[in-house]
Length: 232
Image (cartoon, rainbow, N blue to C red; front, side, top):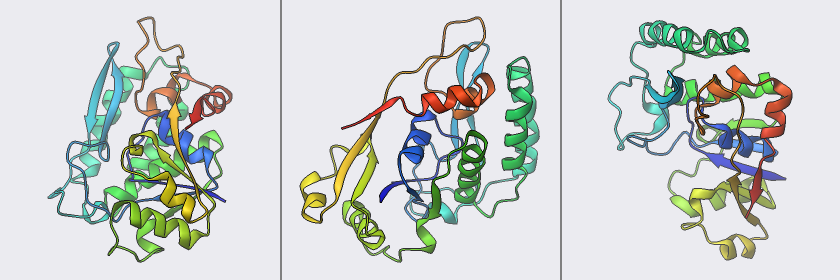
């Protein structure tokens, strides 16, 4: 069995979904410290031909708190403004109505915290594009918060009895392939290849939120883009 582990992000870019698609089981790492100015509660969409960041407001967000402990601040009011922005920016996109339905499903879901909202965005997107990987929360399964960093990831792998762990490419400097090999686990890192699709009539803007890809691409094309990666 192959597994992947990652902090929850709100409608992340295609590379995140490539990781989910590449594994049999995906663990949402929701019981680790929140990351200030990370991608947990924000991402980029296309506005007037340029990348523009949206940010979900949070209550008392701090790197001293776990992701699953942090609530979204007045999600209903924020969502109304966000939907207006989406309409202004994407109304003429070919899959606007389908994507808007996904956004409403997620942002009107009444989540208990930002981790739950992010996970809802992951599951809703996976359901739409046809990714059937099992998704679970680390906080409700593994009971290993006393461990840190690589040791905790390895413990999750051992609990799952996996023989293959895939990590985002950013972890190459901090994960030891030999340590995993000593435990009979193959460690790979996933590296996304550049992709390009038709947006509007301006120059292509890469690596935006999955929202952008959903707006412009049919499911069949998204399936192809999900395979545009290499394992190193």
